[in-house]
Length: 350
Image (cartoon, rainbow, N blue to C red):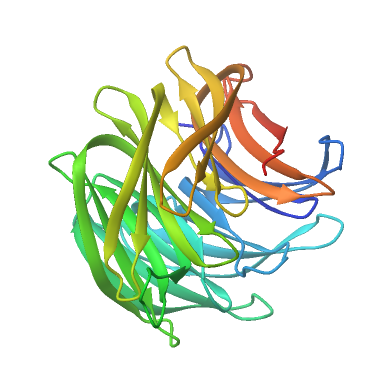
């Protein structure tokens, strides 16, 4: 599987892929206000699979952190400095967990660092926090959380989980796994000010074959909710919305279905808007947009379609004079199939 991950900050877009030789390949791109891309710089590392990438801070940093399974099958976290001209410099790294698969990354809800969620050597979910220094020269593990058996893993950060009547708020991440029995299982993990990981509430749902996670903000930062974008056993796309209470309990609110799909990804665009690029049953890229209202109701707001792609796709959003959704996909063309294609979609969302 030719994998792809992407992150964007303003007009700077970074892609991370597994190239045809099986190595990690990073690229930087300038996104203009008219939606066109200009390739800037490249960087590379060793053998890589199960690639994920995020920014190490919620502010407008260009820098990125990648997580991957290296040539020895171990988890590796690598920090990268991205300059204003797009040049990419490798900085500190960490890791070492054996036989890591289903690797996901999320930016710290607060502070400088990332959260990893992956399937460990025993087949169980493991959630770890990693602090990055301001210079990115060091990456240090701070906490671990251990979850249930998993065959698929997804994760999203949440800063302001709360419901009516809550005095405080929940800050951490929410993971979604597919259990060995084939069911969707969500867990909220609190991340303390010391960046330790504490397991809180969980929610067991129905049968799925795949899952992606995203976070939405309701109103003027009234509260955050999470959305599980799933592929049901009949192939249909289903988005399920959840509130997270200040105590870390998950409360299911609503769901809305799309059409039958083969692969999916998901990301928040801005505010209450979610985008789910998918590979449909004809093998083409299809991009759905959704809103989540104050009651947690999920509404489909649009869809667009592009050409044929192979398995593996990623999405992010950014603002360059206008709001864009960026999809990074692998085409069916190229050496063995798998040429990288970036597409900017005008996200005219209200």
